[in-house]
Length: 268
Image (tube, rainbow, N blue to C red; front, top):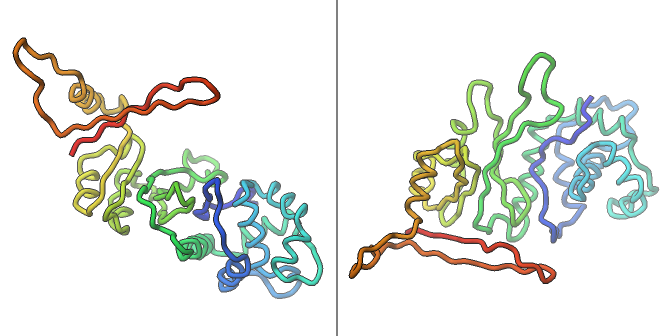
């Protein structure tokens, strides 16, 4: 049985977001319920709303979700208009996620709900990252279900995520993901694995910019970047070559302690 929550594409920023719980319930009410009608004590939408609210509060495991809901059952009953407060058991959550819904349909409905909120999608940064879902590695195999997602860090939700096939990797899946998005005026960020020429060119041609981490997995690229930003040694009577490189430094202070300066360099 599943003990963790599927990647529903929502992890809101620290300041949170305002939405109507009833509207979320209405969106989830349209999901296909695979359970038999006999013996059902909770509607599918009720169970899934509880799961999502607990997940937004930081609970990632079903045991934590069950406890979180139990401690807030009266408040949740008022929000959902229930006649009396009651909460599902841990096994109910497991059965719903493991047998009663189509996970991909669930993920899509949740993503579409948060994407429709006011001001959603207006931030510039798009963080691309991949991860393997916990609890999906089958005995005898090395890797479970792997997803590649484009996340909006300042808003806290996933704009798009796809499953990486068994015969591909994040690099080969990334072009298709980015092609499905509007990158005009956006900045795509990612780890060193995405620092690829073709991928960078695709983003620029789509009207966006990119910021990649560069590590020792590409020693020649890292060396070239280090050379580019080294201070130029000038002969007497000469001056450095004029470039379009701009550099800015920031110095942060925290409780009287100096934190090392950050250097941000831009080249047109």
